[in-house]
Each structure stands twice: as structure tokens, then as C-alpha cells.
Image 1 (cartoon, rainbow, N blue to C red):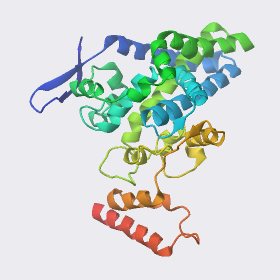
Image 2 (image 1 turned 90 degrees about the vertical axis):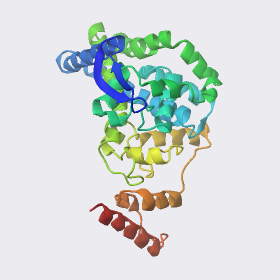
Image 3 (image 1 turned 135 degrees about the horizontal axis):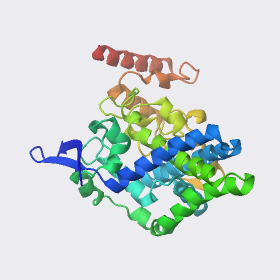
Image 4 (image 1 turned 30 degrees about the horizontal axis):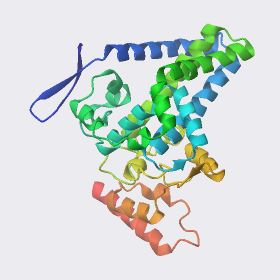
Length: 339
């Protein structure tokens, strides 16, 4: 394989130079090239309903990543009965982001060894590596080693995930390509080429890049109200695009919280609303959260001083004034330290 312009060190003395994985690189080039053509067809010849359908599938299936592969299966932040698990694995398969086992394995490695050579998409290796480079370059030896050490027994014991992993290739063809492309052709006589380029290439590529931005932008640009010593940040743009997954500084400090964020604003964390709905009807249960007291203590101790955004509601009659003043003082102290 050809050498890629990316290297790190395995042990401080023996250099590691990544190589391009050509099949994966060619696949990404094809997907992104097809996306550009699909974007052109949206304005040139595709029916309006075809574009609406593409965005509907894009965001509906996104819950399979956020509520499913991420919050349920990677972090076990809540539990789900089999109908919800089946729905989530159906939606996740439409996104085309490998099978749940592979996605959750890399995500668990990412959290356990974040910002080290064992992190599959280590943000310290730069934006492009964290965004997409990690998928087209050979993994660092530490990543390979740590993947084999992660306990995945809980996923191996879930028959729904076992069958999704076993049948992933035909399921990908049927659900990620076939179903989204077939609906416009069958229901409003869309041309096959237009439907394929818009509802597979364009939709699939946009889904991928929204997920990629959680690994890249949400580790680089934003504030760090909970822990200033780590790279993950609070990024509102990523949160809006990724159904609430951009509150990343909070998530890396409290990864077991099913909300992945402190503030309960459904408009900026739609996945939390999704889970809450299914908890209301009894399909989701044992939702794990973090107490406000724990969050505030952590923000005071390790935050970057930007915690004032979480003071909405302070000053209400049920909030002691002395607590408000103490938190403001702690925030100002951190800011003074950084100046």
C-alpha cells in the first residue's frame, strides 16, 4: 500500500507511518463525488418530493446512530425493550455506518483512550484525520491492540445485533440503498438515476459528514465549561445538525448520561426528546442522568469559566442566592487565571 503523509510514534522511538487503505479511500471518493452530482440534480431535475424524502430519511435514520448505536449500545445510558431496539437497528442500518457492533466498539475505544494513539479518530492528529482520514488510513497499532481488549459481551448477547452483524451486507443493500431509492420511483415516478444520486449518494454522504463533524469539529471549536483539559467542546452547530450530539465536553465528562448534555432543551437535543417519548410509552427505561450538584461541582473545579450558559434559571426563588454567587465567583476566578 502507498504511504500516507500521516505518522505518529508507537513507543517514542519506533515511528509509525500510516498507509492508505485503497478500497476505503476509493469508496469515500465515489460517495463524495456522487454526493456533489446528487446535489446538482436536486436543483436541476429531481422532483421536490425526492429531496424532501431524502432529508426525512436522513434525519429519521439519524436516531439510529444517536439514540441507538451511541447512547444505548455504546454507553448503555438507558435500556430499551426489544421493539425499540429493533426500530433503532432498522434506522441505524439505513445510515450505512457499518454494523452496530463495529460502531460501538470503536466508540468505546475512543472514550476509554481518548486523545491517545489508541483513539481510532484521535483529534490530536488534525481535523482531516479525525473527520475522515481515520477511515481511509491504516489504524495505529495501539488502536488494533485496544480494540481486542474491549468487553463487548453485552452486544454479543443481543440477538437483534447478532443478526444485524451476520446479515449486514444484504441489509445494507436493502435498507441503505434499496428502500430509500425505491420509494420515490414507486410513489411519484422519479427517475432511477435522480433517486439513486439524491437518496443514496447525497443522503448517505451528508449523514456520514454530520457524524464525522462530531469527531472533528466537536473536538476543536467551542467552549469547555466542564473540563478545560480535554479536547471535546460544546459546539451548537454540530448539536443542531447531529440531533443533539455536539455537547461534547459534557458528554466526555459524563458519558453515562442518556441526554449527553446538561440543558434539557429539546430543540437543541432532539435525541433526548426521542428517548423521553419512548420512556413515556414504556419502551425505554432506566435512563441514567447526572445530578445538577455534580455538574456544578465539576464545572467549578475543572471548567474553562464559560459555565454561565448553564445559569439559565438561576435567580428563581427556588435557587439559593448564595449558590448563584458562589458559581459566578468560581467562573470569574477561572477567567482571571487564564488571562
